Image (tube, rainbow, N blue to C red):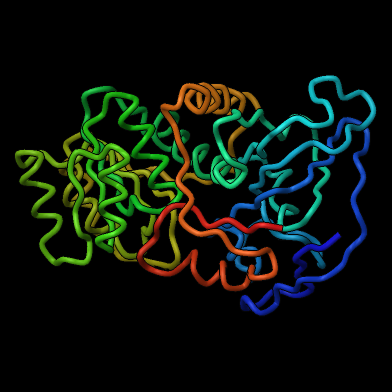
Length: 324
């Protein structure tokens, strides 16, 4: 089969498009024919060698995919050949392997893909929606009627958070750095969308909340924004750090005066029971159409290096997927 492999950590050009032996479904596994593979920022951190959990070299990147089950291993009774599925992002057992034509994985690491959704949309579910749901519901414990500010809302996780927040009865405010991205965030259900390239955009956030600030802030780039978040979070508010690319200096008094909480999270820390709960809720939302993944860019698998550059670039717009 064709796959992207990394033989040594480095820049995007270490992503090699090459032939590799076909995997086989072992006991308790399924063999997935990948129709689309999702690209996430974490893929770039692992590729560059800057992540806590590093795979043995060489490895195939990618933890998000959707496709059709091509074979089932011994003792697998929950799936059959021909089933449409997406990978259940969030398990440390699925940190890589999806940038390929085929991937073998444990049977409990796939979920049914509802018929109305395309394979590209299926590849946008796993990591994005599970991350957003865990941050919003399990970490921040958002309550209907509260104000949610998604700081960087036009990317894969941000769009998932906007849709989940809207469905949960939250007053959603998002931000994006491009006109196209802001239009997308508004289409997905945000009541207000801010231009975070403007110097006064957080003043607008305070005006929209009558000076209270946001009860919950989901932060996609903490090394740039965390100090600012602590000046616009409401009293007893919660800031959940989802993404970060460096260090930042904050003033703890901003949190102290508001009795605010800063919560860090990585999806791989979620236990199996927690993930099962998240995927039950996400699956219901997909089946009813309340949740609808947005794919912004589709690229051929061989252009994975280009995708790794785009996923970290400003102006995010939905999910980037690779097509084998």
